[in-house]
Image 1 (cartoon, one colour):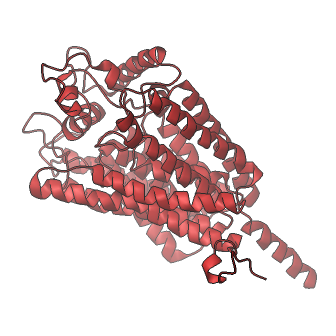
Image 2 (cartoon, helix red, strand yellow; image 1 turned 120 degrees about the vertical axis):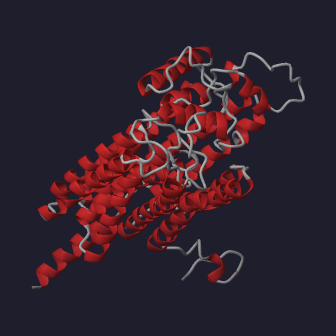
Image 3 (cartoon, helix red, strand yellow; image 1 turned 180 degrees about the vertical axis):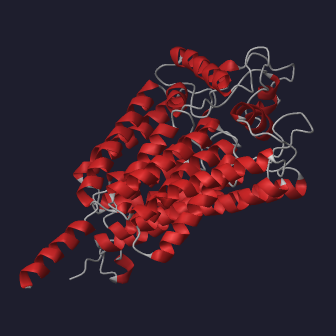
Length: 490
């Protein structure tokens, strides 16, 4: 007999009577919708910037709030129904510890409001961390292989949506803050940011989506699906090159390795190694297009991480940092920029080891002057006056320690290492393309965080993948039992 509360109807108590299969089906679809919220909401500021010449990415943060609330609801159902099994319990608790220590950091921060909601053009305050907990926990409670497949297809879909907009940006320069990457009027690069707010964030997102696509191509039994996966991977590789980033190049290399590994791990036909030269060819075509002068107003391909992360994104788009100081750092030397940011962030960690500066407030201890603007001046105006300051370090582990304290970093490691271990174990146990894809994508995300940083465009996808890596999926076992039963009958 179905459970009810206070003699209410069975339909009004669908959560009480929800089976694991129903939960997995609903949650996987809800997570796909939640992951699409940020890019879809980002259409508003991108269109506004094109039409009015101004925009606010607070709208994008609103997309995270909508998607985050959806994820939190399903995470709550999972906890209430006890769908989180023992294998995932430790990383889920560690993720909860991240949220709790984030609150401690918030209460000891420079600005509690920014710590809560995040900087206006970034949106990664304590609430964002809470939403990421929802994404992670809901995904960790998935029970069916079909649900994992839905999530993977959704991630490919997020990549396709971003790439479609990116193509418009690359070939027209419209709907983008990154058509120029310096003050030089002739340096028109038409860099791709898609709906990720930065080319570097797009490169991170496409790395994960491309990995899902090439492994899907290697493991799918459906010819139509294989064609879609391969075409998607080729598109992602082509677009990634227009992020002009070291992150993008590393992402492409990781994807090629993942594609080759998938064919051998899944014992797929060797013809499916086709994805390796296909991805490489797409990247080379993009390289040739740039060198031919067919895009923007440049005639040579080079990495532009420094100018993107510091000048075009933090300084010009987000008003979240001062301009770079050319006397201290070579902005066109990617290694020099990354090493400089890492060194300065290490110094900040030493000053605030326990609670950090507060979520999204890495720039605050670097501020030295208000330029005579007075107390009524907006914080973004003051920040812009402080040359040589920065708000993001492109190493998420250092950034976490600097803004939320070393205890937060420890909690984060206690989430990610078990996720990698459980993901690898699940891949061996289930031996499906979905399990292998999730395990490899989780590894890719963890590695990307050494050279990239979290953003509201990338983090929801990453935490869904990390959560799914911990999920105790049971469908494969059922299939094996069915095979055994049918063989006995014969």
